[in-house]
Amino acid sequence: MNIITATNINKSFYVNKTQTNQVLYDISIDIEKGKITSLMGASGVGKSTLLYILGTLENADTGEVILEINENKYQYSKCNDKEISKIRNKNIGFVFQFHHLLPEFDVLENILVPGLIMGKNKTELEKKALDIMERFSILNVKKQKPSELSGGEQQRTAIARALINEPEIIFADEPTGNLDSNNTEKVIQLIKQINLDLKTTFLIATHSEQIARVSDRIIRMKDGKLE
Image (cartoon, rainbow, N blue to C red; front, side, top):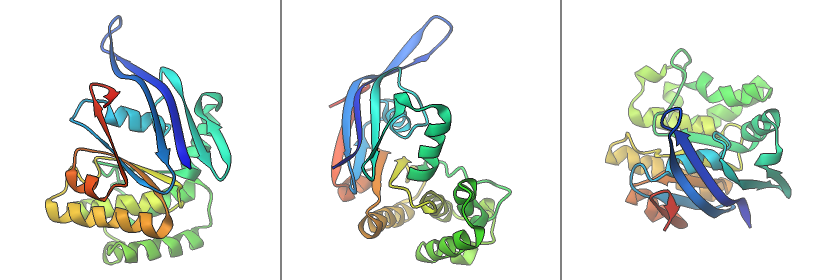
């Protein structure tokens, strides 16, 4: 069963007022529910742009994306901004190369943010967050600010934040791009364990062969197209 079905996706960006640069060309792609899929290719081939379109962070110029959750189908082009935001907050998690943690908040507060945005009970959220943090070996740094963490701790915090709303799918853009080999391996094993235990779907844009080795499927891109 597919959680995402995308058809004929095209995307261009304006270089200046009159000139555009096309980065995606008629891409059709299916993402299977409960699997780890890696989107691989060199820098600049359009991996991140495709990931952002599938994850509702960018709009395609043409084409269609359908997200299917618990027998409900969401066709992006037919949803308004409010509906897209609700779909994103409830069903989707994001992990980026740069963790984007809020610098003024401590680790626990950062993890709670998506759940608080959804209006969930803070006491219940904190219990869930502490459980996740213990599993991710970051419980001991719960009161520290992001600037006080190692790179690996920052990324594990970002993954914990992505999980707090129990999303059906997590989009990860070069999640190990800034990590050394030891922390890269820790993050990869964490992703694999989350997938096995929670059946969370992962779509990962990466050039890491380490991530590819634990993926159920590898999709390769070149020059804005699927190979």
